[in-house]
Length: 214
Image 1 (cartoon, rainbow, N blue to C red):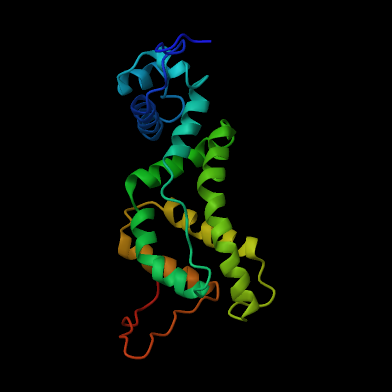
Image 2: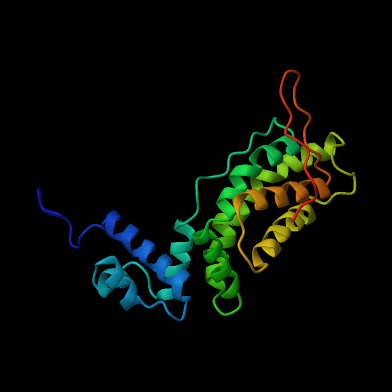
């Protein structure tokens, strides 16, 4: 037992150091990939000693996976009582803004590029970024199926794969990509999936019609 007034052996973890290490690891991973990221470089960028990093993570793959996990945004909270089409079209603008951010695009590219050689990094991205979104979307798809808003033969998993795959394919195309273009593309994907643009409520003004997507 520890004498009264004395702290147990070892120092408690510093949340500030943890955050600095994870931020430095993600920055290096995005800029230089797995090969260009090392515990030494992470420690230097975070302003800590190598032992501080090694006390927390056994190696750089585990550290990068933790950094990717920590980079996830707020938990997904989709309104279960709102039609799927309304959720998709209503969130298109915010989704587009998020997708075209250079840092997000670079992180996704790095994760995909290392999926074969460093599967733990992809596993962290899939578990903590992809799966929560699929879990939140599934009840809305199932409700749309039950209400006849989607074809009866629609497979929820395939539909989610198709929409996510379309976004990744668009991101892989060379050239600049702005939020307005990405939003139009998302809306085209939703329409092709059978999610027609919701009609405005009485008294609301609808958005002007536009031509085809990019």
